[in-house]
Length: 270
Image (cartoon, rainbow, N blue to C red; front, side, top):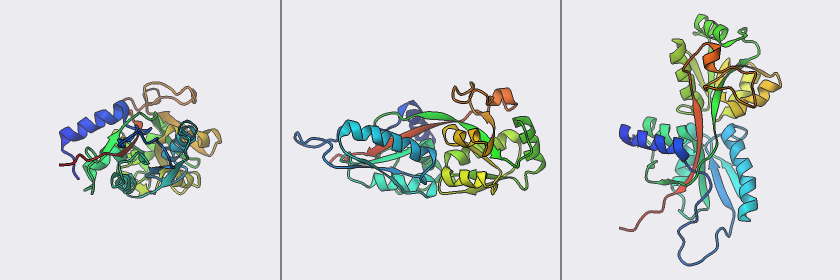
């Protein structure tokens, strides 16, 4: 499904303001209690990535509140569209949730011919955390700050590899944005999630990732990778030593990932 521009912008505004996470009470006839069995949350990316980690933390809190296990399943592939499609086809009973972010629930509708309708087949019900991105590189990259990194990228752009979680993912869109801001042409390497991409960055198999800050910061603190800038107007309280892109020499390069989750929308009878 290709979303019309106006519909895409409307959906994007909804995702940014508060797209989905905890399930609303399902529309079940009578007074049947909910939930009476485990709930499945389907993530569109590999285990260990930021979407997976956030959902597993939420799942534990939901288990305590709801009294039923919340099982996180990873159905990676096609920038999360496989997982979202699986949820869109599920029964609208509140027992199957879709967890992702603006790329899986907004951008994919503009770049893929989806077998489901993002506007009509899914129902957002609450907000999940959002966080800025961070420009990181493997330890062998010689640059010591963002200006030096941009100069190094420009001088070696034919050889620079940028890891992503797949076409249309947040890391991919952020990487393209970085390419535009630096007036370069880079090689993008798709993975089944940011977790595997980060592992290859640590191993020196790829050069750069514009990653979610929550995902890369532990490896930055461990000294496994280099951090250059936060893609926001202010520094992170959890990483006050990392400058913003404005401070580091790439003003205006702002990217933030708003995470989302939803459930299948109940269809009205004709």
